[in-house]
Length: 204
Image 1 (cartoon, rainbow, N blue to C red):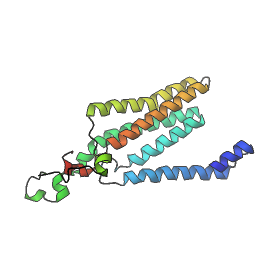
Image 2: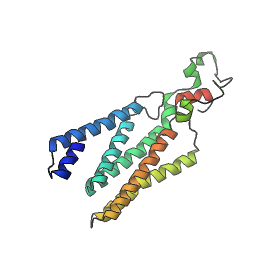
Image 3: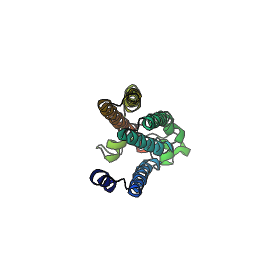
């Protein structure tokens, strides 16, 4: 993409083959990154086809927004918003639907009820810091609303206003709002991750 940009800026030429290769490479990078999370069965919320769909839709929407393609950006933002909501709704049921409990994790469920006598250790570790956040449902819902409004609603409204007369200041606000919303949803993506290791610490 750097070489493609070089051609546009310094030579006034759009080297289309480089542009297409760069775009394909960028999409492949986003997809493979999303699959790092989607293939993790230890986090049922992530182990879904919606995870790569969310990554790809937000990336394409953000790209269209940065490019200034008003109609495409509005369409892709709407699609990414729907996928984002579906990800949250499905994710809230994923851990329960996985059927994972401390009994299944230890393989001791056949001899009766299983409870932890003591936590594995008294300190902390990487998994606890990264994947065993416990946030109140009320706060989670508020952050989801904030994320959705900033990432989707505000940019779409501003783009609708720009469809009549394009304004760079509105475009800057739309991009800034979208980035803030995506950052919020990204934080939630990790904060709401329910790693099965939490079962050993009484967090699930």
